[in-house]
Length: 166
Image 1 (tube, one colour):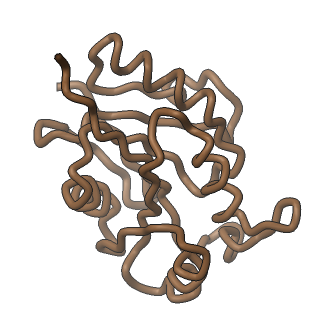
Image 2 (tube, one colour):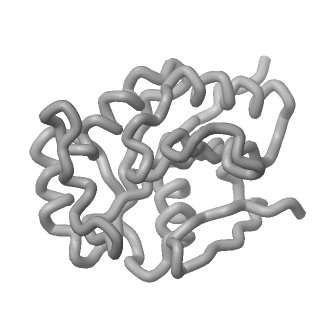
């Protein structure tokens, strides 16, 4: 019998933004974006293990806001988003990581469930709807193996995480 996988949905978030200052606090239908994302992701059937990954500096308001409504988060190195993902996944013993960014407040829980099922059924190391782009911006999802063998390339300027084939 196959052991059940620990699937963690990580929301990559930060308080500061160069183009739209404090966008994480902007409201859609009277809810701040961080709350809307969390509530939408709670509708996923594949995992209710949802954590925000936030930098450990300059995010006091975000930290306070997440705590206030009971949204779990993991703080990590501000300058190293890869380190946040790696240590957050180790801390939570994640077998599979689903990456959603706070730039995607309309993340679709049904699409996430479907993609995770494909990831598991086909025994993949990486699955994304961003390369090549198959959905409009705002629905970006990346799924990758949380084991020690993952190889990740990242771009600090855009603060992205992108597993590569090996």
